[in-house]
Length: 277
Length: 312
Image 1 (cartoon, rainbow over the protein chains, first blue to last red):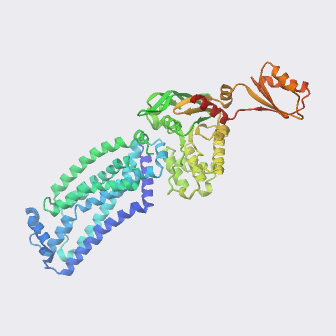
Image 2 (spheres, rainbow over the protein chains, first blue to last red):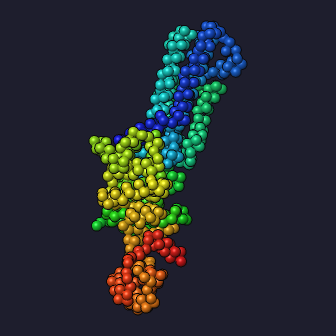
Image 3 (tube, rainbow over the protein chains, first blue to last red):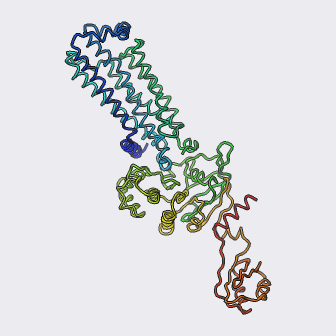
């Protein structure tokens, strides 16, 4: 593997991302909404409501959810007042799957721009005529998508942690976040999900003609993550260290299958035979 | 001279379509070899096969001693390819484009900056080095793309329709640059084109291709001899001759036919050696010769003759 070539490809792709607003804008907006605006709104609302306000828990849907909570979670919430319970439930549990949307969306957007965007802008042919091997091209483009996805996710997590603790301490009375399940979620699951995003983008890009077409198609990758969101809302699953480890394992296995498929698709022979260059 | 490209019955099929059918040709070191044919003839497919971009369906190819099918990555270190579209990264500056491709082509880091400056100078782009490629005119983009093909000093260059999308002025600039690469720098050039004027100007040898089949290969003069019987010589006279001159010329053994148009004689002969005898005959019969011009067949005439014969 010629790492000088791999690095050149990755740096070039990242440069192109920085100069394409349609690509980088969603990567800024989603973390700001998810890690800054929504937690701030929740925390400030709770703060304004006062220490012992149980109002939120009187909502019938939330009351039903509270009733369906597994025993382990109920134990964690025991001894907390209404606002504290609400904060732990919303920001400690329900927001967790949303954090998986960040790496998958970032990786798939950059991956789509990198793979199908080169075809759309008619730059891929000159790239393929270089001596860089199929694998070097593939790895360079993968890195260009996965690294920023992880950096954005992990920076967002740090920001989220800071906000939850700095703004949340007056309500919670202590530094309470992250809870143990978040560590495997961030360190084990998010890299796997970023991989799924970019590998999905490679597969979609093999058939798509334009960035927008591929971008819209890669949106289906978010569907399994929404199952996690709704699974928690309906009390079917609950974020725990064990669950995070299992979800991560499943996604890594899916990645392995996608890697096998996408490497077969991303070859000079396939690309030129497809007649889409 | 040694062959840099050799193909034997090279064939490429896409499903039921045979895009290239048993192509056998050689390209010698230092020559400009033109591949002429209409759109869809198989020119681009041949360039792709010769650079290891497509699998070979039948036959064999050697390019610079490499098998493109199994050694494409090594081969491409020694070739430069210019496609019909410049394929430049428009957000990157001219210099950044060349640095990027130079890196991929394996130019050592210590030499890269100097090589980039050299090719920017060669193609008159030094003053626009910091400008984004997207700000360039079509002609400048094609010059930058040409510079890209040379940044790693390849032995063999493939130019696929290099002027197809350019206006006449830009096209002339690019053709001049290709000519200088061949004549002053001794590069071997494989030029695919359907621009016959361009081919006439640049190529030492040409091959004519259509629907994947190789119809003819040779120098333009060889092809002219193969396709057309004899050579025409035009003789301009001071005054219109009488009929005796035409009869006398027709009696010469190597003369095929003679036509007269006022003061201009056109004599078709079997080979160039007969020209002195024809001139002597005209002078002896009182003709006052102003000019003698052997009329060479243009590549365009040759090309269409080859294509017509293939259809027939």
